[in-house]
Length: 636
Image (cartoon, rainbow, N blue to C red; front, side, top):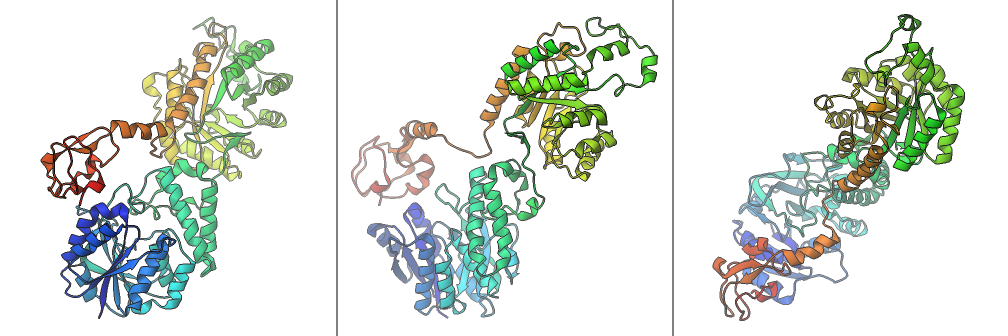
C-alpha cells in the first residue's frame, strides 16, 4: 500500500515550521511520502521547509488564482493521480502523535472511505471534542456540527473518484472539510475512528478555523458558513431547504436573536461552525414592538412615566405632568383606569375607613379620595388626545373588563396589568383577547403565579408579553428589591422581554436595572414631590426622571454587545503602547539567539513578546546592533 501525508503550507503558519518538521520526522511509520502544496511561501521558505524533512517530498505549486478549497482539492487530486492508496491529512500549523500515521495504516480497511482520530489542544491533554463515535455511517453524525477536519482525518483514495472531485470543485465552501465528508456520507460512504493516536490543534490569532469565537461576530460567521454549506447540499438532497431557510432567517434577524444566542450554544462543540442548533429555535420568537420601538432585553429601554393618580383629579395638572414627561424624554405616560365602583367593594367603603398617618397623602374617607382621583371616561379621551399632540404614548392600567374595553377603543399601544391582578385570570384573558402587548407586573407574586399568568395570556393566542420585576412596597428597603430577579426572569422566560417597575426613592435602582438588561423601566412620576396625594412622595420629579432617561440610554449604549471588539483608536494605540522583540547586545550574522539576547520594548510594530518561542534558537542573517528591533526577515 502506498501512503502519503499531505498538507497545504502557507506564510501565516511558517513561524511554526520547525514544529511541523519535527512532527513529520518523528513519525514511526516506515514508508510514507510527503506532499506539500505551496500556497504563498517564498522560495527560500519553501526550500528550508523541504530540506528539513527526512522523507521524500513531492512539491506542488499553487495557482495564484486558486481559492483555499481549490488548493485542498488539488492536493487530493495530485496524490490520487500519483497512485497512492491512503492520504493522511494534516494542517501546517498543527502537530500529531508519533504513531498517528502508523496507527491509521494499521486500522486501514477497504470497508471505510475515511478515518479520523481524536483532536487535542496543543501541549495539553484536553480534547477538542468530548467524544467521537467509533463509526460514522450517515450525515446525521455531522448534521449541524462537523468534527471531521483536515487535521485529524485520512482518505481512502480508492473511494474518491473523478465525479467526487468534480462535485467538490462545483460546491466549494469555506468549511471545505465539512463539505467533503458531507458528500461522502450522502453517497453512502462510511468512516472509522482510529484510537490511541492524536492530532494536536494549535490556537492562535491567525487561525481562522480555530477555537470558538465567543462573540456575536463569531456566531454570525457560523450562520453564514451554514447558509453557504446548506445552499450547496440542497442540490443533492432537497431536505436541506428547511435548514437553509432557518439559517437565512436567523441571519436576517440576527440582532433580534442576539441576546439569547449565548445561552443556547452547545457546550460540547468548539469549532465555530458547530455550536448553533435549530432545536433551540423551533419556537418562533415574536419581534416585540410597542408602536415603532423595539422592546428587547439589553436593548434601549422603553421608559414609562407612571403618573397614575398623581394628577389628583386635575386635568390641567395632568397635562403639565405630560409636558414634563415629554421634556424628560419618557417614551410613555401611564395613568390608572378605575372608578369608584370597579376597584373597591361597598363593604370596604361602609367601614368608612379613614387614614390619619399622613395628612398630605390622605384626606377624608376612602370613598372621598377615590371619588376625587379616578379618571372619568371623557378625561381618558382628553388625555389620549393631548398625548398624541405631544408625541408620547398614552397608556393606562385597567382594573375591570369595562376599562379594558375603554382603553381598547382608545387604541392604547399596550395594556398594563397591575401586580394586584396577576391572579385575576378572567381579567387577563379579557386583556389578552384584544391582541395587544401585555405588560405584566409581578409584585407580591410567586413564580407559579407568574407562570400561570403567562400561560393564561398565551392560551388566548397572545405571545406579546413583557414581564416586569416589581416590589409592591412604597418605598421598599434596598435589601428587599432583589434586582437579580431580572436576570432570573430572563432565564425562566427567555421568549419574553423582562423589565422593572420601580417604587424606590431616587434614581440608583432603575438605572441599575438597565445595566441588568431591563427592557422596560416604569417609574412613578410627579412634577412636585410636595403635592398632596397618594404617590407623590415616592415618585421621581422632573430632574430625577430626566436623569433616569438620559443615564439609561448611556448605560445601554455603554453595555454594547457580547462581541469582544478592539476599536480603531485602540488598534492605533496598540502599535505605540505594546512591545516588540529587541536585541540586548550587538550580534553578528549567523549567531544563534538565546533568551538573554532579547528583551521587549516599544513600539509594538514587529515581532510580539508572545512569539518569543519562535525566535529563540534561530540564527541572524545579518549583523545587528544592541536595541535594534528584530524582524522575521532577520532570521534564518
